[in-house]
Image (cartoon, rainbow, N blue to C red; front, side, top):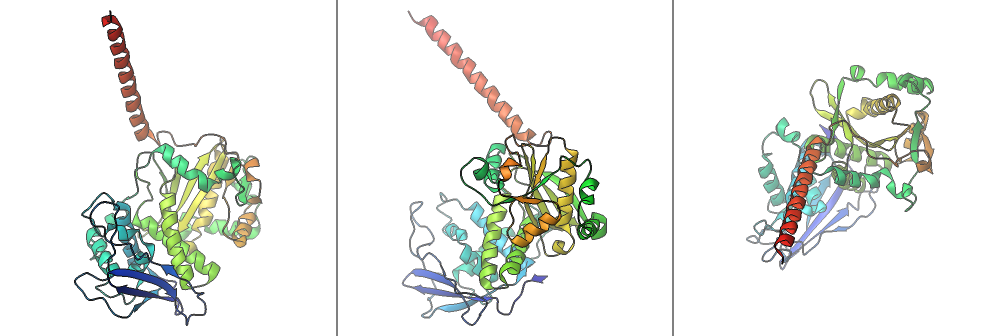
Length: 426
């Protein structure tokens, strides 16, 4: 299935190679009035490494055994989002995650950190087969076994880093707005709902306009044919949403969001893909839990809501869904579900849906009772600890207990050695 195809949404990628130096420039099509000029320069010295680690040598865009062209080659970037192209982009990203600068044999690994090359390789319509991006993509697809049809096991394989609880908590603070509650600087207003006066989710729904009530009636798993499952993010494990299946949702969500905001331009498309990669990496490094949404018939992941509880506040940290789920009221269900659980939990006073990317989204949250507050730390109490399910970080806690036991053993051995030394001294 394809998404967001626009006849005007085409960019020109000009590749120039001469005298062993490679350069690439991402330019918008000058005949496309909806695309303002955009220039992104590829590093000309970003070449396969040879010799000592960290040392770079210039290399051509084309294979050394082939003759580079005398003229730049124009490659069109088709801003069409399909599952096949998202898989290609994810295969490239995985190679970037796995790149080890100390591996002298991996002479091409450095290139996988280049987002412009990734987009050219995944979305270039007429990229020459002997060009570097095409060759790198071919290597990535072969490594992932994607030259044929992908398996569900590959799509749902968790590939995120194994991150400890404390590091996940630290990674969560910036997106939660810690800069404001710690007095560093002001962040954007947050949309807050005080749930202390509600005894049930129905009490909240009764306060909403008629249109919102109708929407929430539609936003059910039974009516929209989806399932939802809670999955904790555990310290010492890969995140439960660190798979291609979840990245696909993030990519479609960001492209749809920026297309609606800025129009179907190539600039918006390229920026959305870069934003999707950044946000996917961010959410999979944070603490909390996710609510995972799947199609009830195909079992395909169609979206997820990332939540974090800290102090006396339940934070709706992130939400991403594919184009299909966007029509099935999945976001509205996630909000209702979060509000219900917050009301039923005596530890929670406020639900925080965070800042909004647009005034329209702020207004939508306001219709559902979430007030946009500038001095939001005065209302949402984040001063306490992160709150987890019982045993959520049990694996890491067992490791911490082993470390503590070893430390105690070493301290006893040191004390015994010290006593023996004093005993033996004249």
